[in-house]
Amino acid sequence: MKKGIALLLGTMLAIGTLTGCGSKDASSSDKEWVIVTDTVFKPFEYTNENNEFVGIDVDIIAAIAEDQGFKYDLQSLGWDAAVAAVQAGQADGLIAGATIKQERIDSGWIFSEGYYDATQTFVVGKDSSIASLEDLSGQNVAVKNGTAGADFANSLKDQYGFTVTVFEDSPTMYQDVVLGNSVACVEDTPIMAASIKEGDLALKIPEGMESEGAPYGFAIMDEADQELLDMFNAGLANIKENGTYDKILDKYLK
Image 1 (cartoon, helix red, strand yellow):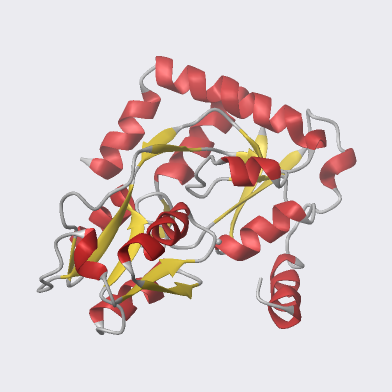
Image 2: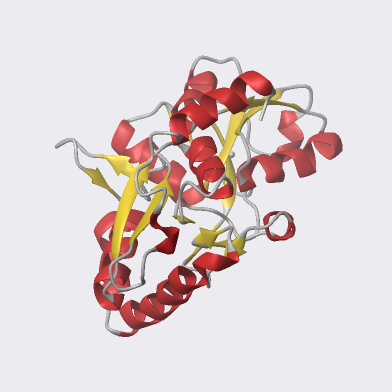
């Protein structure tokens, strides 16, 4: 979730403001881990009506840090800049509804245990007559760059005869469908359901147009940060056992 030198320079400028860049030499007892995330991926990370950055991912990393006793600095950069920050060593870890998939593992992502299973789904306009993948023939579908939703759409476009337009963030992708420029977009199902409900979007989720489920994972991209990954896994197991994990999901999904 680039497109030539201009985007690369822009991304590096964005991540250049990160704090804690020299923290890799700090001892584990006093280190503040830099963890990056997306800006809008409701209900996993978003800004609420009180201008507070909240969400499932935000609460999960907070609960795990408390359980494991480590300090962290969570920075909301947007998907592309967040990924680039971890790749460049300007951040230690990423939590942003990142689907665990082999392509990412092969390119150097090191994932935690899965912390949430999600499907991807096609989403259409509120008054759309599209009700199946066959109905997408000859149409255009909006996707978000670098996501499992984009992978899902691209895996089907030749079979069902539709084209794909790529966007950098979810709100712009949704708006493209609302405006009628694309007949559908593809998004993680829980994110889309929450966005439609809370944002009163003129969109709907047709039945039977979703993918098989796949887990989200916390990710590092440097083996030197294995300690952080180990703490995440241990903390995740603990908050699942003590009920904190279920309380977090209920807070945002029920």
